[in-house]
Image 1: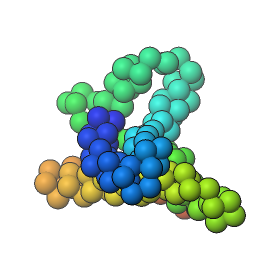
Image 2: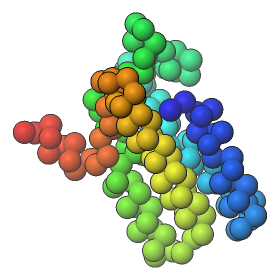
Image 3: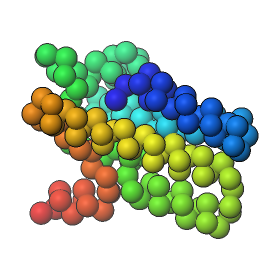
Image 4: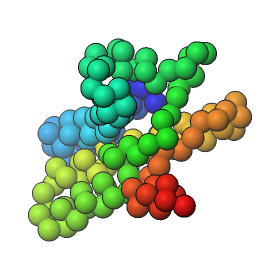
Length: 144
């Protein structure tokens, strides 16, 4: 999904969390549900050997001829189970409430990313792929 789509989808729960907890909690939720995609940008930097820094050019790097979204078979670190497990572990020991907002944002983001892939697979029979959701599984699969 595009960042603006994640922002629009995150506004309603952000307002609810804003009122339930506090404004900072709601804003951190929204930011984390959008900024999780920074790993796409980091992947473009790595794939192009740090030649593409412009965000628009980085986005275009992910497009193929007909404008469909292209997913590089790589690990998107912030989209992995290990990433959220680290956040949960740190939260467990610190009970820092704003980490919970980041975790909620991660879950919300991943729900819509997975829903988008399922939609494209059902509606368009596309070759849309799920992102690798585990670093360990990705490494095991690569070594097989």
